[in-house]
Amino acid sequence: MKALEALSKRDNGVRGVGLVEYVEQLFDVIDDDVPWHWREWTCFTPHEMHALAEVQRLLRAACTATPDAQSEKQFIGSGWPIRSQPSARQALEAMRARGRLREDVEEERPSLPA
Image 1 (cartoon, rainbow, N blue to C red):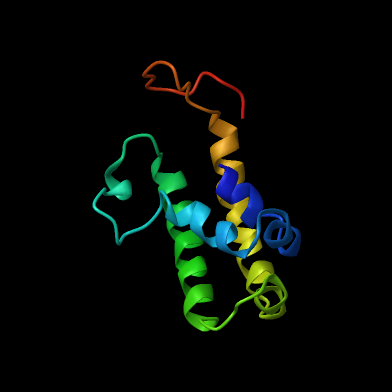
Image 2 (cartoon, rainbow, N blue to C red):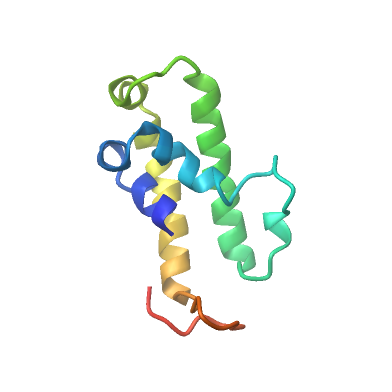
């Protein structure tokens, strides 16, 4: 959820965590180019999965469109934080609606408030 929080803050999200973290926080977990298959995880509902996939698609597009962005200012100037914010906010709201899983025990349903 931390990645979605930064992405949903638009330009302030980039400034708050820095350009590298703004991008990498999501790709640390939601990435199709890694050995784990996040789309097969049962911890996401189908709605959350769809919302996360859309955020991933937009963030990949942003990275492709701004390969030379070396600074927060350049990336913000590209407009991508503004374009991706609505989808990030929607995904964050979907995940918050269900709550958070505890980290100390296995749960089938989240028992903690978001």
